[in-house]
Length: 414
Image 1 (cartoon, one colour):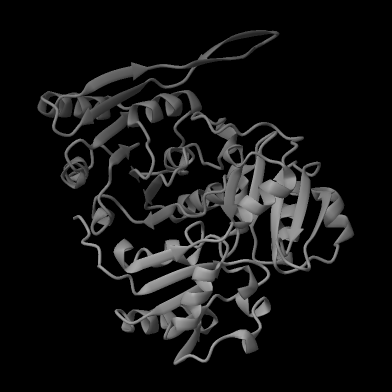
Image 2 (cartoon, rainbow, N blue to C red):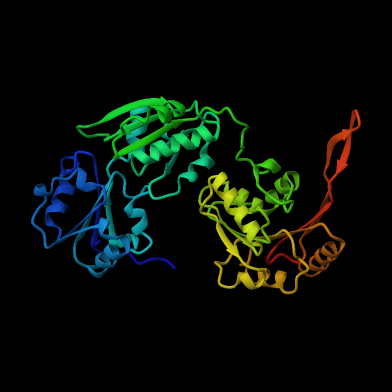
């Protein structure tokens, strides 16, 4: 549905630098002085002198609880409300969050340079070549997906503890020689910058300002965990219920992951397909449906290890556990294609143009895939992988079980 913009935005969101109100443009200062309600970000109390604020009808603060303050803000729809935020409100900021509740035409956003822009300028890093992430209010393990040799990362933090936690995580992951630069109070009177390796920082435990941005120049002493599909099997904790790396790489190429696409991984096992789908980035989402509690625990562990704690995990048997889930853009059935009603439920949930891929290793599973292909069309592929293995003093080929893959796009002709 196309949004109808309001003629006059009632909600203004202004980015503020470390120098507080002094960092605002004349336009932004005028808006602050004329607003009826001012909402302060949770970190702005430290950089804004309360005595410098105008006399207003009301001042709200997000520190009172996001949902409670949001309700108060939305009650004021139509009257002038100004929100002060740090940096660029639309980049991991309150503006991006409020966009879920407020139409674009109701908002007027005046950004300041983001922490990412300021850090890139201080370090001389081309911003388009750097991963920009937030570790503020997000699990620290989110950093894992970005730890790659020679990769550069700029991260918003929740304070000094985030920096020390990141250093500890990187040492544990074999990135202890990476250079961590802490940039404090950028653009303010208390600006400071210092650099140490992750191992040095963890050992020294230096005093770090709570208001900081973390820059990471990755150096790895551990095996590469490539962002390309087909991670080594030992990248996952599993009990044998795992789509092997060669088959996984082909399966993902057939699934065709894309930005913001949602995958159902039905009978997820250890979650390898769902996790590799999400590793393409750009908002790719996945729901892993698995009925066995011990495997659900493995999925969670694998998600954290790969820096994907936002994987949605549903502990349930399919097809019953599929009810009420967000409609998928693609479905992978890694096992259980012969279960009554499973395919039908998945197929009904798919929109036109959605992809369904199912793998089978049993004769009964193959027969079901052939039957479904006869009804719905699509392609059947049979793969068999052999790996070299010791045979006495020599090497020979050890064959893995052949896998039959059926792929189909909803709406194509049978």
